[in-house]
Image (cartoon, rainbow, N blue to C red; front, side):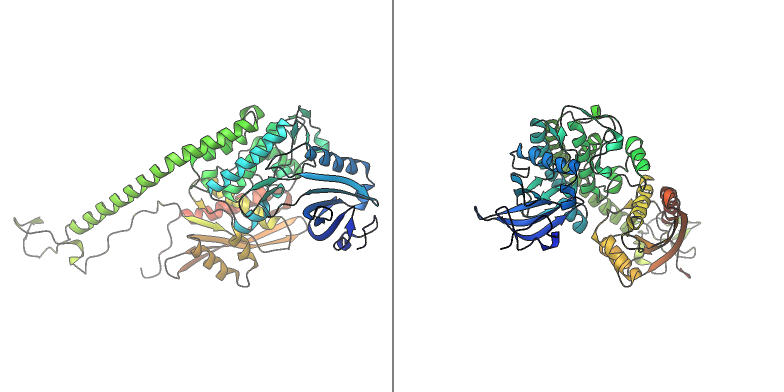
Amino acid sequence: MEPVSENTPLDRFPGKTLDGFLIETPLGRGGMAAVFRARDIALNRPVALKVLRSQAVRDGATRERFLEEARAAAKLHHPNVIETHRAGESAGVLYMAMQYVNGRTLEKLLKNDGRMPWRRALAVGREVARALEAAHAAGMAHRDIKPANIMVGPDGHVTVMDFGVAKPLAGEVMDSREFAGTPVYASPEQHSTGTVDGRTDLWSLGVTIYQMLTGRIPFVAEEPAELRRLIATEEPIAIRDLEPSVPKPVADLVEKLMSKRPGDRPATASDTIRALDAALRKAALKWPVVAAAAVLLLAGGAFASQKIRAWRPAELNPGQPGIVRGTAASNPAPAPVDSNPARPPVPSAPWTARPILMIAELSGPEGDWLRTAVPDLVARDIAAAGRVVVLPKSRACADIALAHDVEVAAESAGRTHGAEAVLFGEVRINGERVQVRAVLLRLKPGSGVQREEFTANGNRREVNVLAAGLAEKVRKVLEAPPKKEEGS
């Protein structure tokens, strides 16, 4: 078996050896490193081998950051933290051998399966908090908690990875020109010149749980400055507006974790674990009671409705026997409402129920962020108004945009997921100009469909305004009573 060298391309690593490790297959690749599944030849055990790219080895700052990650991870020994076995350099290749974890990243789980049931999301969040508890006890803040750095095993066990930007816990003062972390999961203080400590990890944990519960990230923007502004000043869409099945104690805790001021968040990871347990207890106690009450209410309402329907007096013709000046004769028994087949139908109830909307990703240039950002922003603005229920984003929302017949796929997915309307469309881009052409299908019982088309134009830098205008058009149509068929 030939050993790798400084000049071996990354795609030629499998099948070669590196300092006692037989490299088997690639697992992932990032900006400065690649990760391979390998085998420790001496101990005959699988490992995850992280290898720094050759150009990165020659960069002093990147090299030091890589070694800092190895040193930080080596200090931690906890079931929810990936274990570092060894780090070194061989033939000009810098590497780190870590525990091999079988499973999928939380990022892949959410991408493939959509949002999680709230109990499972709490269970994953609790294990991440346990990993943070261990890291903070060792004097380190992780600073890059996100779904891509959380591995979930087949048995549900959670492992936190990648301590590449970990720093001492004792209040590092951030310089906004030297940002470290992943912007959409980073806390307000990471985006500014504030002091960063363990509570920044709790913010990122809050964002991660929010995404597990709703299938969405809370803040979306193209420009870094706009993202910083949103994170620093704006509140995300309330979780229960996006997913009403999430119990209030759970939603309240996530809101607290994502407080703008670090002092308003739980003080420590240990406090967060206790808060997660308390939210689970409250939700578990209240939810069966609420469910039982709802069942009784529905059952009682159905029973009362049936009684009213069965005993409501029929409308009698003026010439019918037993009527004197519109007053019933002394002994007639009221006929059931359905006994007169010619009786006109009772007018339907006013349009007061909140319609349920599914929003698909947009068709358009492959890989362009607007394909997912515009639907997310439209969903945020529609849900924020509180008069339309927006279904959480799922795999079906992405599949619609890729279908051969998008309209057929949208109708099928909407009916499968219990939506009353589906929004889909395409984005066209010409330099900085953006045009979104959208179609709203209102699904009727059976196979009936009403179709509405919308167009929104704008600038890439003002995509929030474009999405807000589109959301307003869609919302007005959804809040109006469904159109009656001709002749009805």
